[in-house]
Image (cartoon, rainbow, N blue to C red; front, side, top):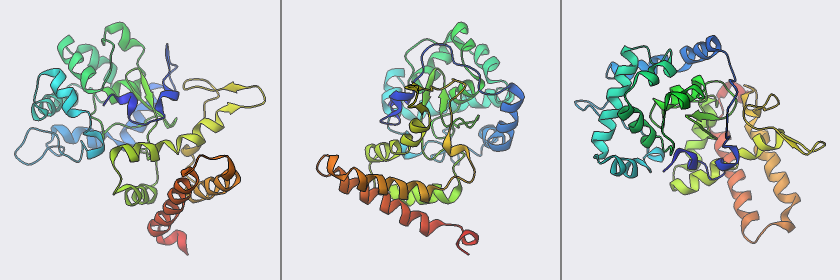
Length: 284
């Protein structure tokens, strides 16, 4: 599945043209070291692979990101295992050649064949030329050499920049662990399609804070006014869910048949999952 389709509502967030850098290189490297330097280097050390196999571990290719692997492998003329093994080889090169510290330079060093391989795996349509790479942010370049499932929102703007695409994911690598645990609990029996729809519900908050109704102006990714409400470490996800329930009641009469009940059940179940996974110190 193309990376742009990870969220059913992510098409609202795809930015065309030049995208502004959202953080300086030193800031980017600081965030990278804080979260993913160990994980990224773990690929080359064998920590990211299954025992006795050159393929990336399922921990790095979780089920929700497996949907497009067969399509990509077929397009490449490879088996899924061979595709993952080739990706692992590129990651090993990245670790050995400083690709995690300077991903744009590393991408420029790759052959056109390897760039095209990454392009297909990441679901991008356009060739990855040197000129195209110049338009990548540092986050976009790093995510381009990481497999789906190991990518991150490194600058904290609420979006995953992967090559030229911006997409929304929930939970992100910044989401508190107890919220991630509640999400896993909530979605464990959902299909991939149902999970994508559930994920898109959290996009509403991002869109709403970036719309200036007084000026009928919308801030888009890369704009100076773009804001990510989830970047606040103290963001109250339970309060968010309660607010969605309240809004659902407010517009009950305007909703299509069945939607009111579906939304009510979703947010109620999310609140219950949050309560089950709330850290003990916050319950005191």
